[in-house]
Image (cartoon, rainbow, N blue to C red):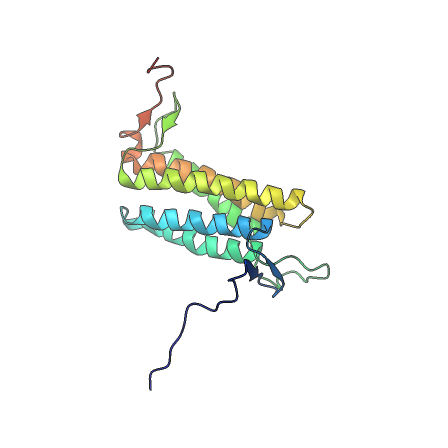
Length: 189
């Protein structure tokens, strides 16, 4: 007898889902929007990884894993009496590591003298897309906070640094800046 492991549950057919805490919410809930955008950024990084290798690919692989951690953090509302370490949360040490990686990649790039158009190599184009989705995830997290929900400081800082890292990573993936496409202000007037 074959045992089926169905992927569909039919529980979301009416437009609801459950947070990690088990609480039912609308699929358009600000918390779902925030962790959904994180998931989209993760998928974009996966697309970029089709065109990367070595240490750079390893960095992106680690980011993908951390984005699942971030999604879990955002999907789990903080309990008022939550003990430190009781839930999977983004840590300040992860933010600090992102900053070090930004600095390391940026050290290999020429100084910016113009805005950059998203594009160049396939990896760079996908990383620019991931960057824009990460910025949207950050905006969704801000909306969540503005709606009175709790998002940890490290998670907010991680989202902010993530888009910065993805920008620098896109530049790095553009042959360390050699294949960048620069904006030409008013060029089509």
